[in-house]
Amino acid sequence: MTFFKTSAFILASAAVLTACGGGGGDTPAPTENTVENPTSSENSATETPATPAAVDNSEAFAALPEPYKSADFNRGKRTFKLCQSCHTLNEGGQNLVGPNLYGIFGREIGTVEGFTYSKAVDESDIVWSPEILADWLESPRNFLPGNKMSFAGVRKPEDRTAVIAYIMAETGYSGE
Image (cartoon, rainbow, N blue to C red):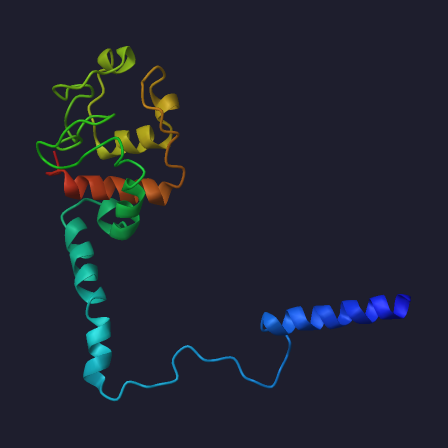
């Protein structure tokens, strides 16, 4: 009786493996792209969209001081997605859960009109700079205990640098 159970198990296993492509059959797996593009113009057409973005990325940070000038634009934009549910960057943009960040650099903390700040922020005399923002973004709660920002922080230094460069580029940073 055990022979039949074992045989049935082996047959069932083989059927499952074959159905999932793991049966080791003679049919080769299809390749991703077996047809070559006949002309070089088609190849260049598929590569063109990436080129302008790369140019725009380097131009966006070109006027920034180091280390922000060398930061990765796409990393900064991607990291800012963590911020955009609470903050806007455009000039005259609305306050959300957090204040609009346009013109943040060189501005005293807690001075955006129409936004209600915590007592800790109101009593602070911080002036925003890229370096201060880097310290803040590492851990807002530890940087200024008692502030209302519930965000845990941006842990990776390269993400902080990139997001600060992105904010600088998007908010009219002029070098103070």
